[in-house]
Amino acid sequence: MDSEDDYSISKYSIYIGFVYLITTIILISFQVIIFITFYKNPILLENTVFKVIRLWGIYATFQLINHFVASIYTIFYVLPPKIVLRIFSSTLQCGYLTSVLCALILTLNRFDSIYKHKYLPCINREKFFKYAIYFCYFYSFIVLCVYNYPDFGYYFYLQTLSFQYSVDQDRWRYVWQYENKSTFIILSLCLIIYLNIFFKIILLRTYSPGSGYKFSDIKLLLPALFEIILTLILEILWEYWLDSTSSSTYKYVALNYLFIIASGTNAITSFLIIKEVQNTAKIFFKYKQKFSVSRLLSVAYYKKCTFYKKSNLMYKTPLKLMINLGVTEIIQQSMHFISSFYTIFLLPTESLLINFLASILQSAYIVSIAFVTLLTLNRFNVFYQQKWFPLINKEQFFTYGTVVLYVCFFLLIIFYMIPPFRLTFTLVNYGWLYSSQKNGWILAWEVENKTATVLLLFSFILYILIFCKVVYMRKTISNSFGLQLSDIRLLIQGIFNFLSIVFLEWGWRYLPTLVHDQSSCAIVLNYLFLLVSGNNTISGLILIKEIRKQIYGIFCYFFHKSKSTTNTSIKTFKKIVYVNGTTKSKS
Figure 1 (cartoon, rainbow, N blue to C red):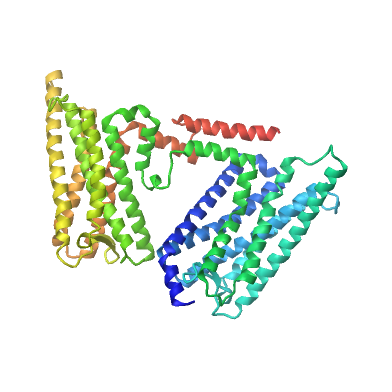
Figure 2 (figure 1 turned 45 degrees about the vertical axis):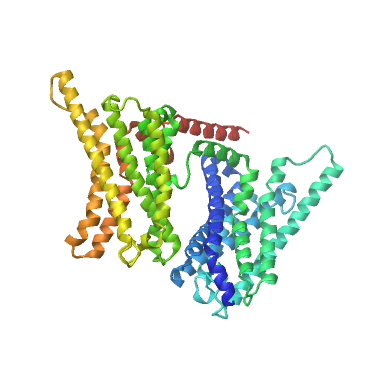
């Protein structure tokens, strides 16, 4: 491969990696829904066809997981040790070759069904397909062992962003020939069987117009047929369009993407033709329509989910502010989540992408402090019954305040992308630091530190005034001195936010001068930074009853700890799935 082509592919590897990633996530999601359908409707597995489709789905999942991992390699342009690559890639080939065998079994089953068990009637069909499934497991184990042998290694290469045999070994041609020829033979046999099935259907419709097969019988032909056609195309292209000396990286990328699609053929076709899978998907996505991958990065999602379900809460200004505070927390936790991959895989961090992610993290951190202050100001206004500045429309004030903070968020991102003010993630102490070697970063540090200090000090003063007001009202009304738990709960969230951020700011400024082990100190501070990003989430989870009920309901659903949940939609979900299963069993 020439250097120009290699440079081009490395330049665009992140975009190619994201295409791989999104495709595999979608296909894995389809496959998970199929597994859920079989779990919720066990009556389906009494049919041999669905047993084979489930087995096929297991091996398809092996392939998709490998493609998912490969997308991570592609995005970060890094590879683990060769032995790890070989182990993972052996499961990919194991899944691929066994899926071809599953296509043959499914084709034989459809042929036998269409021809009404006409051929070899003395054979017990149930036992035959049962042993065929057992043979698939045995065959996959043999393939797994063979591809873990170093001479037959199958690896993912960054030069081509695809899976290839190791050309350093001459023996790879043996396994390649076996894979290619066995796949051709099996799929050609399947294609011949499908042609016979096709002619049988045509003849039946020609000579017996009043009779025919059910659409449900015919549509079950499609999964194996699509697998056969797509895999044959893939093998032909591997054999005749591509060779080990090819210098075109884009051919490798295109074929690797076709490999991903072929790995998910079972998921796609099952999703399209099996009614029970479609029903599960409709119910699942109806219930899950408020879920997203980014929101699941933290427990902060449950706060937004609760506010969405409890629409009456959305009209309260404090809870609107808490939602926006939760958004800034999700942004921060997303950046910490991404940094964990850099730490695990020891990826290079000298890139503009890391600077951009760091600027987002820092901007979200500062804006989250501003939202804490705005929330404190709102509570102060409520406790003092809007006594201060009565001419100001409070609702508009907090709405405009929210808009201003989001504008500041984007301005801060631009500010922290200016070269002297940039931050980066360092693998020396696994934390976020300013990257400039000169003193220009001090201005950016002062902006962050002074802004946080002023806002938090203002919040603290407001909380002291709120505390005094609560004590005064309690003493005036009940003629007794004391605080109720409800009073403390109103204050504890803001105080917790304030104290944790103050401690973090103090630690960043003074702790390195007090601790000799600077590396350990930086790691501890970065972990504290991660926790502070979610402190509002933690306190909200503890203090807000609706959030606790929402999470309890979700855990009850996923882990089946209790038949009764506090979430009506979960009850409905279970009821509908149960009814679908019952209806199917009756039919």
